[in-house]
Amino acid sequence: MRTFAYYWGIGGVLLLIGSAVWRLSPRAFELQQHALSGWQWFLLLAFIGFMLYSEGYKGFHLNFAPRVVVRAKGLQDSGNALLYLLAPLVCMGYLHATRKRQLISFTITLAIITLVLLVRLLPQPWRGIVDAGVVAGLGLGILSILWFWLQQDLRGQSPDVASDLP
Figure 1: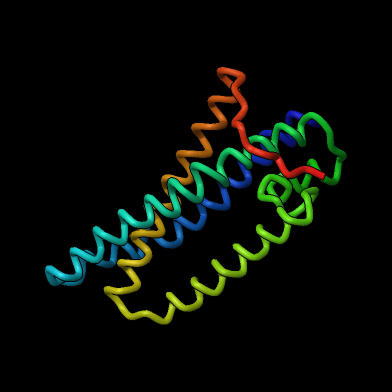
Figure 2: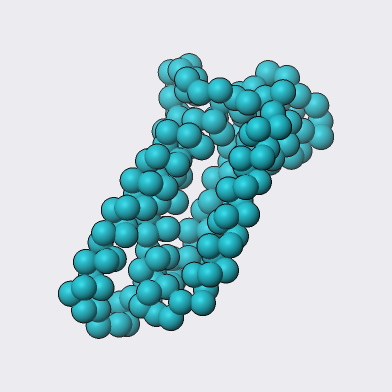
């Protein structure tokens, strides 16, 4: 059951992020149907670069991805059947976390939901430009989680971040 929780926790987070990439990718690919101006091409490339750095590297690679893997390992080491079933939520810091971690997780989630609702109001090609950047950042986030997961499983090297477990 503990091994299930470990793999379900990390795998569930990957499925959730992968689902977002799957849903946003068509909007980004709709850009092919628009004749972008030179300025729009510049903004597209700049925003993709910005999102790769801010969301993919700073947000995922340095913070979220290693914490997901460390929390999954902590759950594997000690937990109960209910936490095992809710392992992806535990790995994302919504459950079985310090109050600070829960507050941060819920605040970031509310900010993301707000941004998603606002971006939906944008017409193409602007929505596609934003979605292309988000897809790039999330894609790097998926690769970061896989990287830390493989480092832990194959080399036994756990990331050096606080698990924020209670």
